Length: 354
Image 1 (spheres, rainbow, N blue to C red):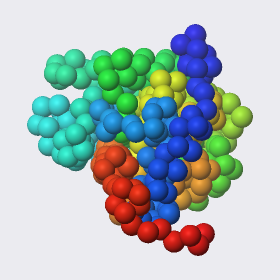
Image 2: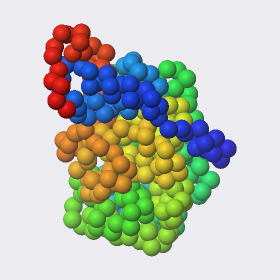
Image 3: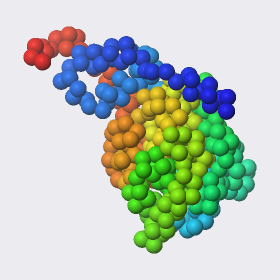
Image 4: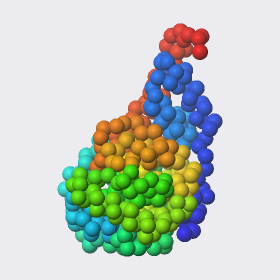
């Protein structure tokens, strides 16, 4: 608990002076003011995070956390629980997942973490072993985890990102893997917002109407059974969350404390961000939204989070797919800041009309 408390206390506001300087430089470049839209906003934000008027293109790390969910036993996914373990092998042995392809595409080093996968993953090379338990409990019958386990999940993410920042990483893309995790994320969203099970629960892996009905029932029952307190992020995580979601929330808090940016992926990463912001609202300044997920409830989620996603491609995979694409946008924004000419340098007349 001490690491969590220390991290929450270390999260400070962005550097407003640097952000103003970067905004002024962008306005001086040979373009209409604000015409680069999201690209301008993200480089201003990144400059405020790093405290540098001309930030360098950051070293990137993709963090994928994995865990199983007790609620998956109710048949709320199109895939069996064993798929979580199989995907760990795909990430690290076959290296054939979307996460692998897009980590390479955006120049991110991939870190995969077993936060609570059911079964023995010790023979998978390169996998970080941080298993809290072999999956959460079925939250339709009681809390998903203990409060101590929730703290452990958060502190695992914090410790991981602290170690990576010390190695020079300043931009983190985050994703997850865990059969049943959109059910947990839907319950987290409902717990924080008061939205109904119907409003927050989508098809996840592309489930049938019958499974969708079962999934909504599970979310509704979990909320009625556990009564998570929206004023207490730790309570929400413990009662209806997942180990991998807690790990990602810890990554977000740790990155904010270490003045690094996190590109938030879709629905599940957004649920983790809700937990992180509930624990320390200031961490939201360090988060960059990537995309609008096709998952039910995501638009409402990003509004609550105050994020402004850059793309809408109908994505609903997770695995940091959207975050990886947007990480490349930040690289482009930094290059524009560095390399575009000012009106003065290019001897181009700027209208005096404002």
